[in-house]
Image 1 (tube, rainbow, N blue to C red):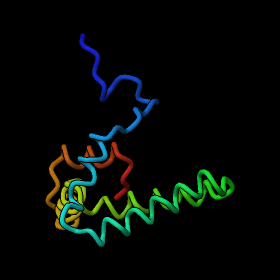
Image 2: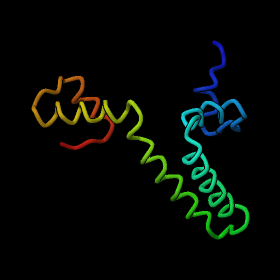
Image 3: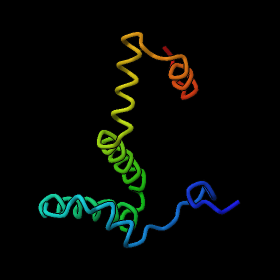
Image 4: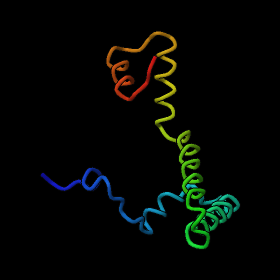
Length: 107
């Protein structure tokens, strides 16, 4: 079986390279003000990790908050909302109900 970078070494995270950053930040093309603001945020997070190591928890909390905000821009957000609507309208299939239960939802 071939090695799969997405499933092998699940405890390890590869270092992001320039191409990863290009892909991640491409939506900022044409929005220099927002790109500058993100740059300021990167510097603050870096200072928490390098200059003020006692603020590592603040850096982690900031990144967690960023992930929470980022969530609404993903397809997960739409799928989750769709499942929520089906649940409250009593329209979940048995398979969807089992899936939600397996993910830890209680209803």
